View 1 (cartoon, helix red, strand yellow):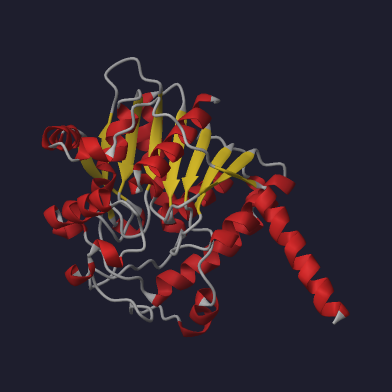
View 2 (spheres, helix red, strand yellow; view 1 turned 30 degrees about the horizontal axis):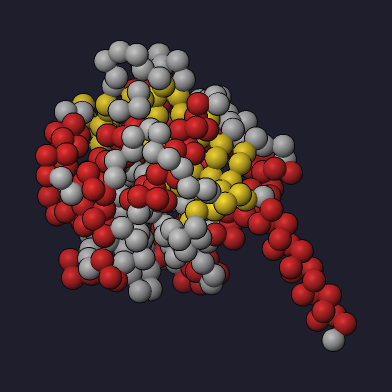
Length: 347
């Protein structure tokens, strides 16, 4: 009984210690004029976002192992505040970020975004184009470095910031560990720093380099796009805008992850936590309280180790929010984007 009580005390101490590293995000006034659901429901306003996105510069470059990488750039004509490179999540594409790019551009930022290999409008590595596959996780980082050096850096911006979401957070955090001087500051939304147990333990045993869907994963299923069944966002309007974006660009659709993608991601989590002390770029991290996609406890573990290593970082929990903070309800989305832009303004 004594030992049970002692273990409980230790567990509670660790829990509260982790939570002490996070602040709760507070409601913010919309001082940056971030788009609202009411505006999105106005057809003229929604079309304005579509027209703006269509006006961006698009192209491709050749990434590692001769995989074509699609990108889009939105450059400020004058009075630029800074540039932002966006690293997107698994299954995502630039088309999902139209509203966010529009809002950031209207606040004076030039935007650079690319579709990671194996998804969006970039090249696929598996015979089934809907399989989420990667053979070498490092290639994600190598592609991003090429994009940074040959497109972002060459435009001589005063400052360059990183914005990374979900899987893009794992890519972005690794990038900061390997290239310490490329960004002035970084922001992470629901970063994939770990997956729910026992995923990694299972994949350690059952992974296969031959592209095969992981247990429970399938190709893109048009029958599973009902808002009531989603675990990504509480905002119905933004959810269906995301679905419609992919309906208009079917080549950008991606289905479930392969067992090897999961296995390689789990290996990457170990790499990131081992090398956290190499980060020199200040960063802010947002963790959604109701996240069902990535492991929130991994955020806590990472921030604790980063702070102990002297990394300049701050972390916030976002109440009543699911994984997709940039397409969440107005309150949570405005809170997150406002705090992120405030953070960039410090650097």
